[in-house]
Image (cartoon, rainbow over all chains, first blue to last red):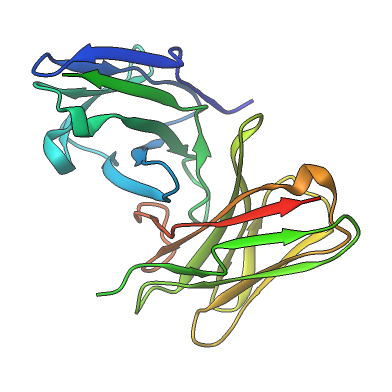
Length: 115
Length: 114
């Protein structure tokens, strides 16, 4: 079955330190990959996506993600975390050769940045 | 440009009732998708509409239905509500409904079924 895994329920990091939120996928073919962030009582905000091309994708708010086909991973990174980055992060995949825009989401990772 | 709007933001219903949720996509966007978010199941795709036609459907019972109007606004309906339908329902729109499109989400409708 097609799936997305976020192996860590929670990631804790000190402000100013680099952060990584992990995502792996199990999908046939070459999927399209997305990261979204959700703040309490809010919808999802788009951070970045990988469609094709350069494996390093830069997105909003200083976030970036690296697509690794051999490891089927798409980890989200930021060089220097801010307290305001504390939120729930979702990795999502869209199946290749599928019409439409349906996304398969991971379970989410709570990022907590301490001051 | 205004974002995706959803109404109402909060709803409380009782078992057996039905409910209709509304979504207005970003201006010019033609594709609207609906997702259900619960603590146990996470985010799950319900269905997608494009040009007033349902294009994809997730694995939900027939009690969940939707439609899209000619102005791209969408509604979803849940009939015969069950306690397990309590969730945050998120609407997302994209420009052309292409598989490479970014979906932009609304703030959601929080449905509580008592």
